[in-house]
Image 1 (cartoon, protein in one colour):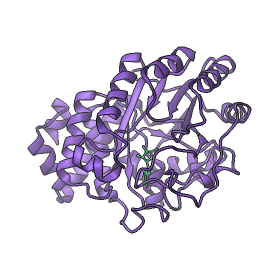
Image 2 (cartoon, protein in one colour; image 1 turned 45 degrees about the horizontal axis):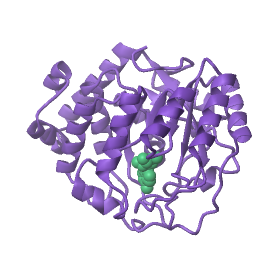
Image 3 (tube, rainbow, N blue to C red; image 1 turned 90 degrees about the horizontal axis):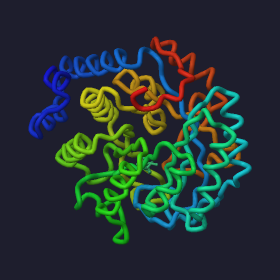
Image 4 (cartoon, rainbow, N blue to C red; image 1 turned 180 degrees about the horizontal axis):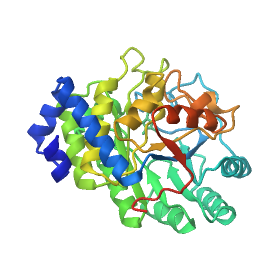
Length: 341
Ligand code: 5AD
């Protein structure tokens, strides 16, 4: 742990040993070191991002995801530009200075529409950061979104192991293409985020080591990790959820590896356990992403079962969130929270 804090990296064998470690003293020390590093860099302030789920339509059929194309049990929706802008206005009033537009890879969303949407948010909110999380697009599209005013892009690689990737995704999808997209995003100039689900079906500790080494090399500005949670209308319905301790361990490792990274305590972690969000922060996370989507649509963006979108996971619940963070000695920041700022 000390070597990781000092050098920001370990070798594969050392990462593996840490991931397998069950010694409570070591694990407490790991968390404490990660928390110290986050506090030294960011103070006790947690950045907030308003998450706007713009569509649950998707052309992909990922085996883990509740909004996969093959799920005919959910009503599909897409927000209009005006609805998205209304979410941003609500969010701005509440104190949000980052808007995250997330959605499935909807066949009916044209690149031009995204460009116009981003440009209209950029015009109305010149002081806000715009983050996109819309999956795999062409290099040209990434560039156009960026020129229209988007600043950041989230695209989890999900797993760096080819064989594991095949077990999570149908044949049409490709790990190589996903990694290609991540390189394009970075080269375009986005603050780029990647990450994984912890405890996804067939994941091994060796896969996690590969993920860590990839993230070490890629050096993303943002790292999103949360536990896998089953969704009842997917092929993975009968798999158990990912492990809290393993998720926290990885959060801490990433914090020590990359002190300046923006690392959210994810909704999935808050869904896994009532105190999940707080535990993520105490393990080194420094971002939360409350839900700013129109309330009537939230339940339809069901990536996994029981996904939290109300209370402290919602934009309206910001005061409640603030209170919960106060109990562990943290507060919300109204800064944009750019990487390196
Ligand atoms: N459990 C946890 N996370 C999930 N995601 C998708 N489906 C699930 C699930 N069942 C995550 C993926 C994706 C992000 C938007 O949500 O990692 O990148």
